[in-house]
Image (cartoon, rainbow, N blue to C red; front, side, top):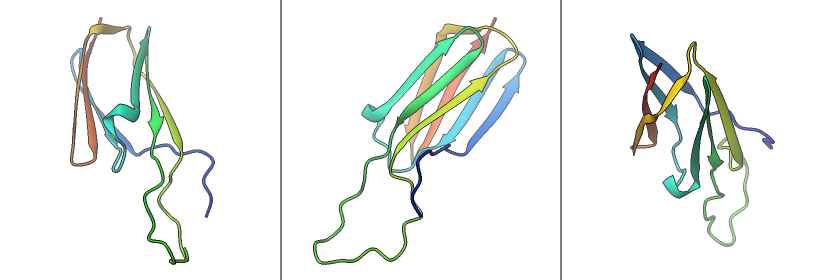
Length: 100
């Protein structure tokens, strides 16, 4: 299967004006990720590059997406860009932010 777009699985949690966004990005280097906040939309984009395949092997199934990705997450209020912090561990990107 060939993928032209990839939308990583994303979970969204809130507690008042505090938000936690969890995104499944296994195999994506942090250097390949970009976060952009504009008004009430957080855009997460990047690329999962093709993994090395041993010479001489033939691919019989390809279910992992190796391509660009982009997710736009719309929140109900303006994002406080200064509040954004994130961590990436075990293939999960966790984004913490606050809305105004």
